[in-house]
Amino acid sequence: MGIHLTGANKIGKKSRHDLKLMRKAGQIVARVHLLVREMAKEGVNTLAIDEAAEALIRGEGALPTFKGYHGFPFTICSSVNEEVVHGFPTKERILQEGDIISVDVGATYQGLIADAALTVAVGEVDEKKKRIMQCTEEALMNAIAKAVAGNHLQDISAAVERTNDAYGFGLVREYGGHSVGHKLHEEPFIHNYDTGQPGPLLEVGNCLAIEPMFTGGLAKVKTLEDGWTVVTVDGEPAAHYEHTITITENGPEILTRLNEI
Ligand code: MG
Image (cartoon, rainbow, N blue to C red):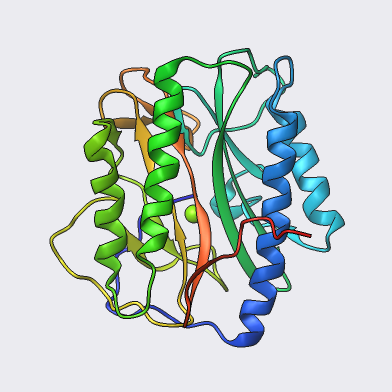
């Protein structure tokens, strides 16, 4: 989820104890992503994915962070094709071959939060959808690589925008990343484009949710009457990838990537 924050010139740091809990929350979110990859097949309705995600999170002793957040009614945001973010999972939305589905999910473990999103192809999808997904995931990884102590927040934002130079997709500007931890959305907002301002200094202990979104056509988006679902204005498909990371002395650590067992 990406809500617009005002911005701040300092980013909070998490304690070792906070990080321990965020690592646990991150692994729960990563397991939900694995579940989404397994479940996102033709004929599956998106509410079934939501229910399975909620059961997994609660089974780990965690809470679904999004459920009830500003009134959002579900565990996951499920955004199919032209839906960009904050879509509702429903029984009626049955996945079809060629769809792409973006799932965003948060887990709260003993008060600490991890938040991450991915886009999954349902069966075989067209070349354009593949490239939007590739661009968005690449933008996320390029941005994470800039999450190094001594850099500025702007280095992350600019890396997202620069990734698109080779692709030329629509870059959604209204939504973006955020600091995360005790609250889902902590200051500052992380733009997905070069603002021309350095922004706050990145320090060891910062925890960030970085989340680029790209569309296959115009960058312009609108919100549907449900007050949540964000769609592209031209009906072109969109992708969304997000990880929660922490900045360590050795560089970025991705908390929402499944650890090797
Ligand atoms: Mg987020």
